[in-house]
Amino acid sequence: MEALYLLASLAATLVTSAFHSLLLLLRLLLRYPRRAAPTDDGPAAAARLYEGRVRHARRRPAAHTFEYPARYALVDLDRLPLPGHLSADDARRVASTSGPVHLLTVPESVGYEQNPLSIYYCYDSAGQGQDGELRTCIAEVTNTPWAERVMFTFQPGSDLIAKPLHVSPFMDMLSNWSIRADAPGDRLYVVISVQHPTLGDYFTAVLDAKLVGQTSNSLRLTTFFWLMPHKVAAWIYWEALKLWLKNVKFLDHPRYVNPRYRDEALERDLELRTSCCHLQRQERNDRRSRTAEKTAEITDHVDGKGDADIAKRWCVWRDARWPWS
Image (cartoon, rainbow, N blue to C red; front, side, top):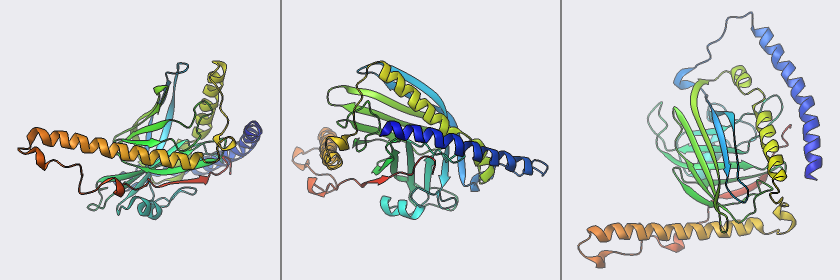
């Protein structure tokens, strides 16, 4: 089924992308005689433009490393809502924040979308023209060619999440994702490490990019990201072929062998959160024990909350759009 999907995707993408590229060329030709509009709107721009590289490093069971150039947009969802993604208000409700929401994503290009990872940066309110403090992030992971999407919250800086989605046919569902995503500025840096009970910390993906511009001009956005999703898809499938040629085991989607894989992921994630809270309590108690005059004052609580107060992570699954829809 997945092979048929890929063939249909390739055929439809060639036709739709060629048609939309011709339309884009026509728009550029019609605009050419006119005076060029400013392309940098300053602090009020709806989107910041980043350019950098994505690096993947797999250490086991077969070593495999590659990298490719990438372009991303950081979109102010209050100024520029994007179809197919959460609205700013929806993201604020999920994150329990009250400030700006910025979405890091690869926008659709000439009728095609290929976006393995998007991140919503949710801020608290601040003064006019300022973002405030980054409080919560929401990851949006899509697993083309299965047309599935999972969204979940995670803490900025660093967080550990039980793997909730079958993203690669060369990875099982037993892993945890360690995610680091700092507040974007002139530099953009995101790291995901995959931790496995038997393979250890065996895979790392890094996005390292720098700010190259900002705009509210739709035509500039369209030209800046022309064919970017197509390139991402080509790199992903080419490297997947290399892994297959290295005899890395190809795994079926877990829905065929374990219909409860989503529930089990939520259960494992709750166990992770409980364990992490316990370790944090131990670390805080250790620090207190070095400075406290009376060890009897040391308790096994943090902010007056116990394990019973640890809530499940917000995590939802949805069907993703077809890449060419």
